[in-house]
Each structure stands twice: as C-alpha cells, then as structure tokens.
Image (tube, rainbow, N blue to C red):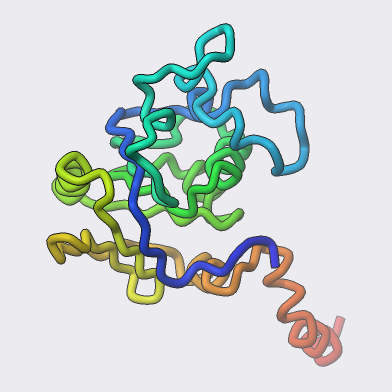
Length: 198
C-alpha cells in the first residue's frame, strides 16, 4: 500500500486560521530538491516556524504544545499558488492525515488525495464553529468519517457532510495510490485485453 488506509479519524486538531496559505508557505522552494517523500515534515511552514537562526518562533501554532493531533484546520483557499506536490508531502510527513478548510486549491487537493491526506471542505460557517471549538478547548476532538463523508465536532455533536470523488474515496479507504489501484485490478485488465480484439 502507498499509505495507511483512511476510514474514521478521531483526533484533536491544530488551528491555522490564515486565509490564502500558498504552497511556498507550506514548503519553501529551497527545500524541493529531494525526490522522495521523506523528511519534508521537518520543513513544513519552515519560515513561519523558525527564525533565521533556526530557533523556533514561540508564537507559531506548530510550536505551541497545547495544540496537537492529526488534523490541520486552515483558513479559506488553503494550498493556493504553485502546483508543487511537495506541499502535500510535507503535510503528510509531519503527521497530518486530514486538512480542513472552507476552500482548497484544486491541485493541492488532488495532490493530498494522491498520497493519503484527506482534504475536507466545509462551509465557512462550519469552519468558524471548528475554530471556536478549538479556541474554547484545544483538546477538542473532530471525527472525520470517510465512509459517511461527514465531519463532526464531538463536543457539540454538530456535523456537516463533505464531498469527495468516488474513485479517490475508494483509494483512500484502501490505502491505494493510482498505481496500487491498477495493480489491484490487474487480472481484470488482463482479461479485458485478452477478450478485446486489436
């Protein structure tokens, strides 16, 4: 499998209520030399997390010990800018398995789905409820139910449905990337080729 299967994720969340977060802020261009997906988490939001002398910026949310979890909650238009897939790699490698926002850039959304990060798009009103719930209690948990396509704030029971492409949903549930999917249906492909005249 390309990554862990995603079914139901229950976790606290890290709030990043900043709009128009682009891929260069997620992973600065100087860290794009590597071709494997490993190690990018160290540089997730690098320029926001660290000073020029590599000391942590205490005010940045990833350096605040009261926030933790496998869910990143971002502001509107998350993942805009260039198409670098390394941005999704950095999110995954840091340990996030889900990003919640009221709007995602299409390329970033697809890059996430290709590597096992679930982008959950919610209404602006529900996003505001999530931020307020986390502000009231940093340990508040969200439940991301992929089979039912529903996100729930467990403390209040408020929930909202989200959309996902059926093909990508199947791959996420099985932990497949595109190649894994094709390998899984290899017999069907071979049978089709045998029974289809050239």
